[in-house]
Image (cartoon, rainbow, N blue to C red):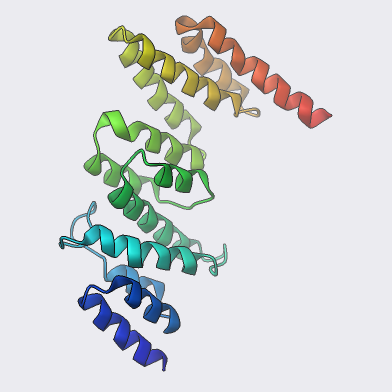
Length: 219
């Protein structure tokens, strides 16, 4: 019966009945890598050379991987990295770089391969939209210095342009980020200095927020 569902799933995929194909693959317990291979492409930023690529990703690949991932243990790190990196690329293709869906995925526990995700996001978006996804990607992998350097570069660019509203946006984002780094005082002091140069009042929130976090833990 599993072989039959596998056969029907591939047939439905060719007919572009993606939701039906997903159902058959789940019933057939089809290997996750086999399904991902169906979406492989010579391009690192694309999946299929078809017009309904987004439909195929939305109805088949994304929900299939999300469901299968729940049953994979943390011991299988290689497979988890493959699944999460593929999900990142799929969300990016379907929803865009600064979409709530992609950002929410990055804020959850994930094992994305940073280098592959960086390549994909730089091919699919411009600098005005991709920065937030890159910051969340670096943050989820504990690459805090890289995330803060990216935010600082954007802040300095906006200050040079004398763009008050945009520069304030990046000051706030840096303050929020630094406020969460309770155990990394060196980074907090290093990256709070340029924030003080732009807005002292907002910069002070870094230290009031971190001290409040510490008080709550002590209480």
